[in-house]
Length: 161
Length: 336
Ligand code: FES
Ligand code: FES
Image (tube, rainbow over the protein chains, first blue to last red):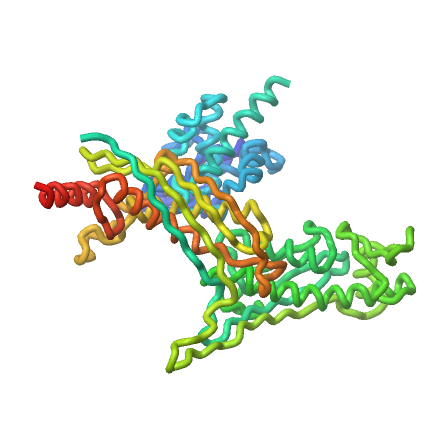
């Protein structure tokens, strides 16, 4: 199959990459654009470690063809803050020891961001549901759920002030 | 048919380290010209927090700020030897090696500082904030960064240290079987409450409470992370995870996360623990290992709770709904 030019908007930047027409968004983000916060735990939709936002919606980049998201706004963990400083959601992960090996972490943060963007004050059950596509083998989930609860509180406090 | 509850417990004594051919870990520490500390190890951090713990130990022993310490790990080709991250040994072995290396580096640091302050190294103390003082003399101090710069550019000295911790081999006495297999032991007990649906066979873990004794905790938050994560792994092994559902046939085996079941956040109850501290004489600052034991007591505790709830005797894992229903059938047949 002939390679083709794919134009993507990633973290607010216009990118043009030469890729196989069947290249996944995961391949392009990781290999062509070196955005390695996008992880590859399974490559078949089972773990959530490759989670990114496409036009604000949570998407598994391993199940998304890069060509199909031309023209969409793609956000990876690297794009959470343009200065690359840690954002309150990440700070909440740090403070709650919500990462051990860290392999799930970027995907968890993106899933949590997608949740908080559409529901800024989620219940515990809504957080559990929002993270249900993301696996973690280390933490036992409780620290991650607590981190998202704390982030929701921090974000609503910020908005109030 | 109903939902019934049961309680079970299990306890574990867990050895720190092993001894077979001797169990060494070594460490090298050096100071950069700016006074930062580099700890070089071949030990591997799997996410349990080894690099954090070793940086804490190096900072404490050297008397410098934690933030000034960088731990370089995991180049097993070029780093100083480490036997490996297993046997819950790394905080203990690598931690002891870092203490030894940091003590030697501290001596070298205080010698240069003594020359700068015109004082005997024995009369100096560190404040842990990046300064070295003459004991009891206000205003007579020098920043660690200045000492490191002077060592490099004025004195031609290296501020560095070597650590080599070895648990010697302990062959087994062929007559009695006696040997000295570990360096210390950590202890735990876990109490679990479950609810079993006697119609579907589904088991829900309602509550997991543990008490641990892990020596002096080097980092209590990391210890808690191990305990909570390990209890979750125990739930997974007890109720869901198996590589061979067709055992003894290994085919079909689950090859992906859709088929290899593990509990998610929804299946994970509140996991709480109390930690007691009885420092180990052989440990770095009294620390013991807490890496692997965290999965050991939850598993039998959950099975015991299921048996308690149903008045049956299940002895295999995972306790899938099928295993539960078969046990109930057997009980009914035996009774009827
Ligand atoms: S890598 Fe995409 S879901 Fe696992
Ligand atoms: S921190 Fe290791 S998989 Fe989540």
